[in-house]
Amino acid sequence: MSDEITVHKLNHMGEEVLGYLGRVLRRDERSVVLEAPFSGPEPRDLGYVTLRPGDRFVEYHYADRWYNVFAIFDSGDGSFKGWYCNLTRPAEISTDHVRAADLALDVFVSPSGEITLLDEDEFEALELEPHEADSARAGLAELLRLAEERAGPFAVPAP
Image (cartoon, rainbow, N blue to C red; front, side):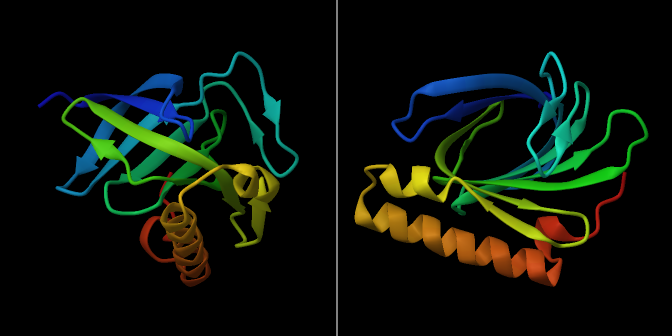
């Protein structure tokens, strides 16, 4: 088994919008945790966090959940910046690839636990099947509960 994996971020219609390489940290039959650097050419200030080239993302992808979670660490001093979460359809995970269809709705959780909900209007504008919209909303509720409890991928991260 290779420890390298290609992540394919898809839009809600299943079209690839971004692809990048990561290194597998662990996996089981329903999930994979990988590490990947932020590869933007310059810092990107999102208002609630600034991403810098080389920031380390520890990514949690699930084949049975409607979201993924990225723990973000600073490229300079390794400090923890927070968790960025995407509401997605359950990921397709194979030996060498992860494919996840992004459903626009995102959540940022700061190191102190402050939650910022992002792109609600974009999510509502998507033409999703009712069961998909309901599943994404249930995924959001689960994410918020886990973040509040500091459970699962929201356990205090190690640098």
